[in-house]
Amino acid sequence: MIEIEIDDEAWRVLDDIEDRVQQAASLALDAAGVVTVSLTDDDTVADLNQRFRSKSGPTNVLSFPAPDTARPFLGDVILAYGVCAREAADQDKSLADHLSHLVVHGVLHLKGHDHLEDAEAEAMESLERTLLAKLGVKDPYAVPR
Image (tube, rainbow, N blue to C red; front, side):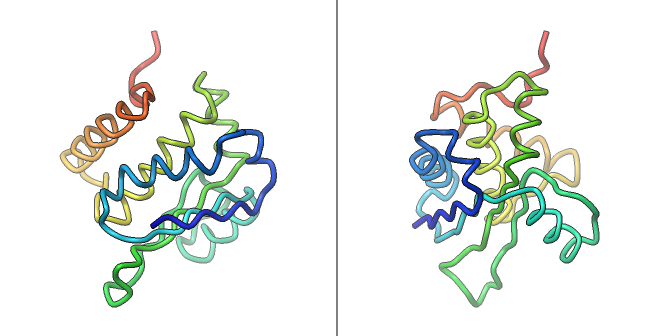
């Protein structure tokens, strides 16, 4: 089950926002639990980033895993509209595809995947590519020509 919270109306620029988030999160979850996806603004994400990661400024996506005792709830994935929209434009990607990638990425973090080490990053990116291809989203890690 995926709970979607749209806290920043700017996200509604995508007509199919709920369906897109639902599809991306469901693929990454693979029936493994419950998550909340919050679509919010840069200020909210900047505050969370500072409070919980001691990093200033907003980032595109944050994942907050739930304690093991909270299962089947896996945790929260929170996305900042402004950062995501700027990244999509800078990378010449649609916001919809970038959103799908970041939702998949965030849910995989909740499931224990990481990218701190090279081998972990390669495995996680490979899984992301596979899942996103099922949604018709191009490889987000491909180097533009």
